[in-house]
Length: 466
Image (cartoon, rainbow, N blue to C red; front, side, top):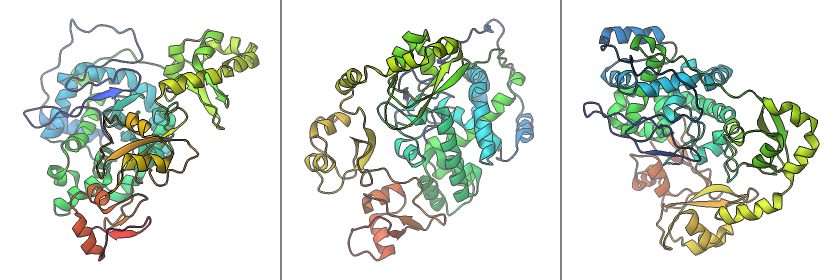
């Protein structure tokens, strides 16, 4: 997972992270400036006349406070953690206030799911580091939602992602998937700091750092072998736990708390147009969008599934009186809307996003023919200005949900065994792909370990990789 808080430039120790963007509303944390732009507006009391950060507390006091908060996950105190504590309590106090305002929107859900999966309650703070508690946050690496799932990882955990619907933005479903992923990572590494590092950069990257460090066993021992963003990830996590629990000690007061609009749920199994529904019921379109962040184009598709839509409670009475007529009207206009959608979607309407890794000898024409799409679409989907592609390149291909994607789907999240010694070949894998997924091992090394005479691989084949 790609966390969205920039690694902080403090005494030259931390690099800046990549800039992030948002699918439909501006991302709350632009690069180099954690200026908050809340999607839910609140009337706030101004503290500008008397807001100030108290003098720095002593390291001994900060360490003692962290020890008082520690439960399951170690809350280590060192100069790296202190740098982020200073950032959240001194340098960007408004960001911390915004998290104090927003945390009650999602923390009850996080706490419920974490308890259900028998996971540490402290993990509820992780979404702050990932997304700034913004369900529509989207990074330049295409990680999306409160828990910043990549497309392939999301699909592996059952989250749909197509032109109309992105369940990575659904708070309930994404939180459930994040709990399952975190459980899986902890079962592999048996250490919460390492599991968090793997959530940020992938289990393969953490294994590589462990090998490079001489098989050290803790995050701080492999710290220098991790990518720069991942080095700052665990310190940020510890620091935000401190900042939110000792906000008042740092003169961070936030009387306002954002709340969801009171709402009911509606089961929908036909085409459902938000704008038409809003006009017929008097609902505010923006309220519908905020209550249903996973609905991307104001439309619920007719796809043989029942979708749960949240609607404002204020329209309950008028909707109940004319329920059948309103739902019939909302479902009309489907064909007209689909014609428009086809024109504005670059031919992705009704399709699901998949990723194909270019193999040796591939050309765009053969790839297009293999998957029943046009070369023109391949170029548009991947912003290609020519037909030149290279081995190992990732190509986005949008396919109908009924099409077979086994050949092109992204690798499963955890194909490496728990003993870090073997790798299970996934459909479409090449030795080149595997060497890139597992830093520190070369194609020649894989061949030597497995007595391979050629580069041919079969899905399901087990390779020795360590």
